[in-house]
Image 1 (cartoon, rainbow, N blue to C red):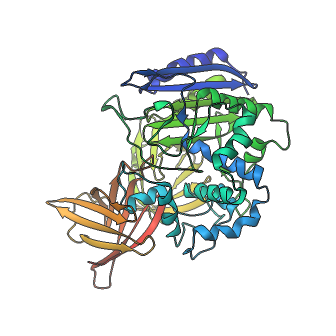
Image 2: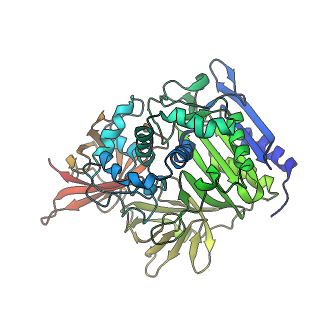
Image 3: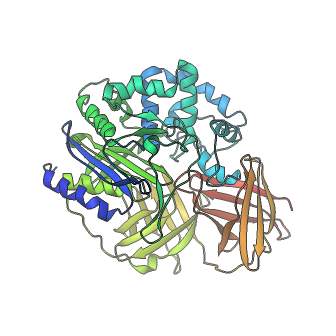
Length: 524
């Protein structure tokens, strides 16, 4: 491991406003328990105008998950005794009930409830009250996989955990955060801001880009447990210093949170207790991202180097990439440019295991695999493969678009990708009509309008907007959701048609990475 390079850190921090352009942001570095650099630039509100500072409290979004799990481990160390209580939140679930540990490790197999708000008819800007969450969760009847066997990100895991914590302790989650973490860590101004309509310090998050211009995000969701904490950069750097100060304590909270998780088959997992485990520049890192429309955040801790990085934007640039840039600079590492990938990798497939459309797009710097919520960047590997930190795609035999095998070690998933010859035209006449989902107790209506096809969803939260549908293959369409209540939006949903014996369309399955293979029956 190379020595810490403070001058390189200063240069990397100075470069962030130009590399990740937007209204404002904060970033800082802790080394050996001391804050060695901190930055705040731009504005927390362009209209006021109000400058961004290291004291400005910003939503850290899903970084909150590790705080929720920390409270669980501290206040309810025997939490396994509550596994049966998960049934209270999933009364209609027909499969194996996930344990609390499965919830904390994102191994429950449950579909993400923020993605499901789209299918329940929510519009991006409408109000989502605290009481709206549990009824959606309670409708769930099946999951993606047997609990404990794989990984899939799911916000409602932590909503269930937070409800159990408050019920069992008789205390509010905010009071528990203060007692267990904020107080000991010296996070003096951290607060729980569950209602996103009323952000701390009147900070404004911005959608858009330099190309489109920036406009204020209109958020109206209430979240708790899965997200909700607002903290300043000063607060977050105090948290990182506290982690370092307790590093040698065998009973330290972060030590318990960051212990290596595993799947039920014993294989190591890349996520546990609200922390992602990854390797950046050859160094093992624990951390987490955070996202709300108009905001992006990321924190990383490299225990072996006693090094932490925090980046928070009030716009939608890639905070993980920004934090990685700073971390690599601190470690004295240069950014390498991968070799080009052959264009014969370009194409589209259907994942046999998940039913999701999978695409590979090559460029001069490698390839982009579009499968999960966030695209994977891949490089040429050995034996006719594409590889990334946790993904390998291996080419099979046969034809110009052969079957591929895909392994995703962080998800404990090995699957086959079946070629899907592209179809780019379709008026939607065959699929038009009304569809019902018994899984969700919700509906979908498909309409064709002079060659354009649209879908609208109806459910517990109302009637959503008309979303565009596009044909991509035989009996395969995508429903394009670019904006939703939570961020990031689900993106492209794969709509796969099913047919009766006489060839007529009788139903479909619909899914995205966060909420897969939801069956619908065509009713009209």
